[in-house]
Length: 56
Image (cartoon, rainbow, N blue to C red):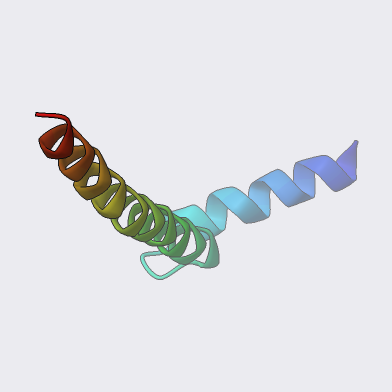
C-alpha cells in the first residue's frame, strides 16, 4: 500500500511542476491523437464529397 501512496505522491508532485513528465506526456499524446484525426478525416470527407458529387 505504501508503494501506491509513494507513486501517487510522485505523480502529484510531477503534475504540480510546469514541465513535468506527466504533462509533457499528456501534451504529446493529445497532439498525436489530433494529428491522426486531422489527417485521417480530411481524406475521408473528400472521398465522401467526391462520391456524393458522382452520384448526381
